[in-house]
Image 1 (spheres, helix red, strand yellow):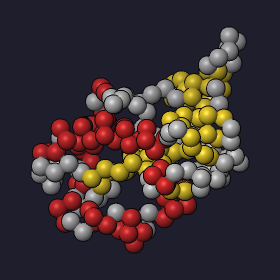
Image 2 (spheres, helix red, strand yellow):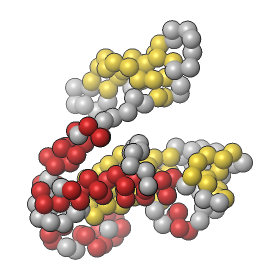
Image 3 (cartoon, helix red, strand yellow):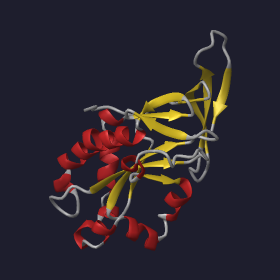
Length: 193
């Protein structure tokens, strides 16, 4: 399996770790053939559900396993879940049931902030007291994210590559960066928020 990969979002809750892949696809149905997803007739990629599961199994879980004796629940690796969140309005109802079980639309994902919805989705670990201590272990996750293997990537937005930081919101809600068009020979600059 892959030992490297881009992870869109990791959420550490009081009892588990959610590894999130975000897809903002709009206006065209999403289907699947031979393990690949299609946006309309355009082949996109291998199933993002399978790719994200691979990131959990080959990147996140091994890191957590190595540090399991440091967690407050001594000796137990935190539960991890792979979830693909569909942020756009594309119809994904024709995807295989095996993919849909690990997918949510954005509205349902946001509802997980409510305790009753969270507990319903993650029943196993919400009923095990020794698993409900991860919010005491944020320093361990900082250690994981700060290691050399977990460096943030230089991301692009609409063909512009992020460069140096120019502004951070006082409450750290967002940051602004200078940006450079990645494919142009001209020196076209912009900014990314």
